[in-house]
Structure formats: structure tokens, C-alpha cells
Image (tube, rainbow, N blue to C red; front, side, top):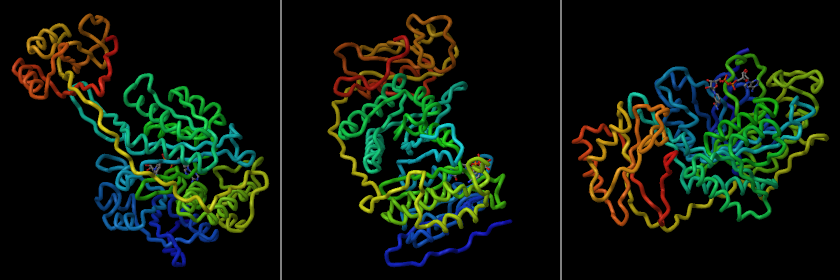
Length: 493
Ligand code: NAD
């Protein structure tokens, strides 16, 4: 069966919330139709504007998979209910999700993942975790450079405003949803400045939430524990890359990728979608599970203040799952009573509007809660910043000692060559001959005690290096902030 999206428009009441809807690719149109039918039956008041995104738009030559007029709708409504899309293979296509997240400033990705034992098979029946992932920064800023023949670089950017916003959102979310603990995952034992800032801000802001238990875990052990015993966790807050990985781990161990919805939240907009992709392998067969998108719809209703409809819909869905009416992806002879297709599942949910589950915990949404307020960032007084040196990154194929001899020739009375590292490991002075060296060297010049280099004297240093034939590919100024170094030491320094 091929499914064609209808032009469904809910009755537009004066109180209806304007929302932009995209039917997407693959199973997208099938599950979106099912989701809109159950939303309507639960009493959602939505004024829908439909847009086209995804494969067809990419094929028309729009590299981000979205047309300018679709942006007009998104900016008008500030609310996006989105079915999955297919990202075409090959170069030249930009990720639509990243484009929309950045375009609308959707800084928080919120993914609840829950086990529905004994009705859906899972190894972790008590799992009920919400991952709050920072969505805009970190290695996903997309600033990459090839610097030498052998070395490529991706900049990891963590900002105080971005971190304060996501950490506060996680605590506010935990408070609003009556959750008991927030765990922060970072790798600040290695990345002391970037992940160190995330951890520090977590401690600072966490102190404002005394009723919530706070924990920090290094991401590697945190991810391992999440996979092994997810029931230990409640809300998790983490930077972008770790969050991307651990939220998929969480969905997988909960039971089915077809069951989880997600919210992308910003100060000026929000997007709600299933976490899975367009599932081209089952598209058009009418067997996809619409639950991820339905639960994203529940999150959307709660976000726009339609708590009653959110609660009715969530409880009807839980009752359907509890009654064993299951799509093929979660069907088991032990936990299910009937295997149904996408639309029959939606019909079963609609039949149960007004009912509450008896064994699974019923959902409760408070009418006083809507979107979590996002306070404006209050910029702090700037720290006292002093320039104390420069890291010069150099392409070089010789030995560290030969490079050092060349660099030392460019020293002046203000700065001296302090160390050379290769991939972060000290190779001069007193490096180990065993250290493997690429063609990419970080050469650190530091100020002599009591001397104050400035940008002009450092530019002269670079001029002397250029004259000496040193192939520098990038520089980083070394600053202290209120006397604390704003740069890491070399390994072995
Ligand atoms: P996928 O999530 O589409 O599918 C993975 C597996 O899970 C498949 O076997 C699929 O049949 C199954 N599955 C997924 N959703 C299901 C559902 N609702 N019911 C039953 N089974 C379901 O991941 P993929 O195959 O890696 O990606 C397919 C396409 O989706 C790619 O083009 C990818 O770029 C895109 N994608 C889009 C989004 C998005 O729009 N948010 C997210 C992820 C992937």
C-alpha cells in the first residue's frame, strides 16, 4: 500500500495553536497521518500549516532539504511537528535537522526513554531516563580545517552562555516533572577547560536546586553504566556529542527505537519528532510503529500548554500498549494480544481516549506547566585578561631539535620558546625518541618573567618565523584570565 498524505486541517478554533507539520519521507507520511488522527481524537487544538521537506526538496537542488517558504511557516508558528526524512547519500547535502536546530536556535534536545515492561520486551524493566543534550555547540559547531598534509582539526566550542542555558534547562525540567536526580556526563579529566567548564557550571547551577540529587560521571563509565543498569539514572545532562551517542544507547536498551519521541527546544521555537529515521526498508507497507511520533506529539501538547489533551493522549497510548495491541516491531507472543498495522494501532489508541492504564503508571500533566521558561543570559563582568604568549602551529617534517633551533632564532627579549608538542605530547625539550611524530607541531612561546608581549610584538615574531622559512599554519594566543591560564599544558610539560 502506498500512503499519500492528506491535507488534514484541524478545525481552527480561536484557541488553536499554530503548528508547522512536515510528513517527511519513507514511513513519515504513514506515521504522521496516524499521529495527527490520534492528536485530534485526544482533543488537541492545532492550526496546521503543512510544509514539504526532505528528499524531494533535496532533489530539487536545495542543499539543506528545505525551501525558503517553509522557513516562513516555521518562523511564523515557532512550532514544528516533523516526520522523519531521508537524507540522500553522497556529498553536497546538508543535514536538515542540524539546519533547523541552528536556524531556530533549538539548544536543548530532550529525549525521554522508558521501558514498558512486561508489555514490551526489555532487559531493563525499571528504566525511565530523560537525556537532555546540548544541541548547538561542542564538536558540532562544524568548524573543521585541514592544517597539514597529515593532520585535520575540528574545533570543540563550549560556551558559558550555552552551558548555563542547557544545564538550567535540565534542572528546570527535572523540577517541573518531579524527577529526583540530574547526572552530568563529561570527560573533564581529559578536557579540563571545555568539559571542565560544563562540569563547573553544572555544580554552580545545581546548587540552586537543593531538592534535586546531583551527580557527575566521566562519560565513558557513565555510558557503560547507562547501558548496563539504566534504572540508576533519572535525568542526564551532557554536551552535544556525548548526548548524541548516549541517547541512542538509551533508546536501544529501552526496547525499541520505534517508541521514543524527542523535543528540540529553543527560546524562539520548538521541534518535536520521533527519534527514528524514515525506515525505507518498511516504507509503504503500513506496518511502521507510529508511537515515537505520537509520544513526540504528547510532548508538544504539554509544551504548548494543552496539558489535558497531552494527558488524554498519553494515557490512551499507554492503555493500548498495556492491552497488548502492538505493531510488528514490538510484537511478542508473551507480551502482545494482537499484531496490528500503523493505522489500526492509531484506531486502537483513538478507541481508548478517556481510559487510563491499570498496570503501567498513568501519565499526569499539570495545566499550570507549559513550556519551561528560558531566562535570558546575564553576561558576567569580564575577567582581567593578559596576553602571556603564543602557540604557533607549524608544518614540519624534520626532527624536534632541528625545528627548535630554527624557532629559537626568532626569539626576542619578550618571549622564549618553551616547548614543542606533537599531537599534544611534549617532544622538546627532552622528548622521548619513541614518540611518533606527524608533520603538525605546536610550538609554545611564553613571556619572560615580568615581560609583557602584545599583539604587535607577537606579529613581529611571526614575521621573523616567516623569514626563517617556518611554515606556520595557525596560531593561538595564550591568555590568563584573572591570573589563571586559559590554556592547557602539554602532556609531559
Ligand atoms: P531508521 O531509524 O530509519 O531505521 C533503523 C531500523 O529501525 C530499520 O530496520 C527500520 O525498519 C526500523 N524502524 C525505524 N523506525 C521504525 C518504526 N517507526 N517502526 C518500526 N520499525 C522502525 O534508521 P536508518 O535506516 O539508519 O536511516 C534511514 C534514513 O532515515 C536515512 O536516510 C537517515 O539519514 C534518515 N534519518 C532521519 C532522521 C530524522 O529525520 N530525524 C533520523 C535518523 C535517520
